[in-house]
Length: 491
Image 1 (cartoon, helix red, strand yellow):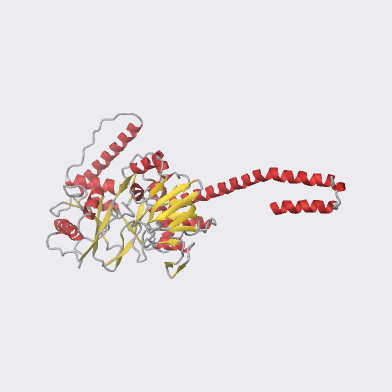
Image 2: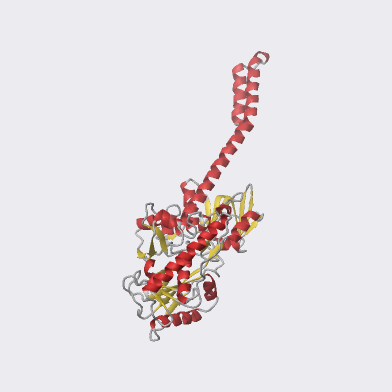
C-alpha cells in the first residue's frame, strides 16, 4: 500500500491528550501533522451514549477540582462553552448506607465508622512514609470486616474522598466536583478544541489529517524519524510521534516498538496500576428511591467489598429520567464485564430489592460499559499509590528518541483526571516543539560550520584574481564579477 508523504509529527490517539497536543503543534506552525485514532470517534475515555433518551457519560463524567484560588483549565473550557453541569456533594453519602434488610445505618454509627476508617487510612499513610524513610512502625490499624466497614473502606479508597491525603487536584483547584449533564456530551469540549485547527463543518470533522479507524500496531523509530504501521497495512512516516495511548494499552501487546523500548521504560510502565471503573446505568418505569436534598448518592453494605456498593440517581442531572447508576471497580468490574448484561441486571435488581423492598419494578433497560476488555483502552485511568515514586512517573513520561509519551498517566500532579490528560498533552507538545527548534538550530550551525572554510577559500581566490589581473587579457572587473557569480551560484 502506498505510503503518505512524511509528516512532521504523528499523534497516536484522539483523546483529550492527543487533541490538546495536536492543537499546540498547529498553534506553533506545525500543520503537517497526522492524528491516528483507532476508533470511529474522538474522545478516548470521554465517551457519551444515548440511553433511552438521556445523554450519559460512560467514562469521565465529572469535572473535579473547582472553586479554589486557581482555575481548573477544563472547568474554564466548559464554562466558556456553556456546558451544563450539576454540583455533586459526596459528603452525605456516608449517611445513606443501607444494610441488606433495607435499613439505613444510624448516622452516629456511620459517622463513627467513617472516622475510624479515615484514622486507619492515615496510619497506613504514615507507615508508608516511614518505610520510605527507613523507619519501622508496627501496624495497629484494624482491617475492615463488617459490611459497613467494607463499604466505607470502598468509598474512601476507590472514590478518593480526599480526606485520607491531600490530593493535588483539590489542593490546586478546589474541592468541588461537577457532573457533566449536557446533551452535547463531555466530548463537546474536544470537538470545539478540534475546530480551532482542523477543518470542520456542522459539527463534523472533515480534515483529512484526522484518520479514524486506524489501529496503530507498530512504531519503528530511529535518530532520523519514525515509521508507524497500522493494522490494515498503511504506513505513515514522520519526524516525531506523540504516543497518547492509555497506560493499559502500553501494558498490552497492541503496539510494538522497533527497536524495543529500553528496559527502564518498560519496567516503569508495568509498575503502574490501572484502575477499572464501571458505571452501570439502569432505567426504570418510575422512581422508587429517595430524591430529596442530600440523597443523590447512597451506599449498599455487603459482606463482599465493592459488590454494587456505590449508587447515584440521575434526577438532579436529568429530572424525570428514572435512571440509577451503580459504580463497580477493579475485580468486580472485570467480573461483570465477563458476564452477560442479563446476569448483571439480575444481580443489581437483587441489591435494589434488598434496599427498597421486593415490590419495586424491574429495570426496563441496562447499559454496561466494558473498558477493561476494550483493546483500545484496557482500563480507565492510572492508579499510582498514595506514596508515589516521582522517578517512576518521570520514566513513563520521558521520551525515547523521537517517540514522545503523553496522557493522564504522565501527569505528575493530576494523574487520573481529565485536566491531567489535557495539561499533559499541552506539555508534551511543547517539548516536541522545543526539540524541533533545537534541531533546526543545530542544523543551521552545522551548515555554517561547513560553509565557512569554503567561503574563506573563495575570498582567497578573488584576492589572487585581483593581484594577477595584469597577467591576463580579461579586464579585472570581469574577473572579479565572474568569481562572485560562482560563489553566489554555490551559495
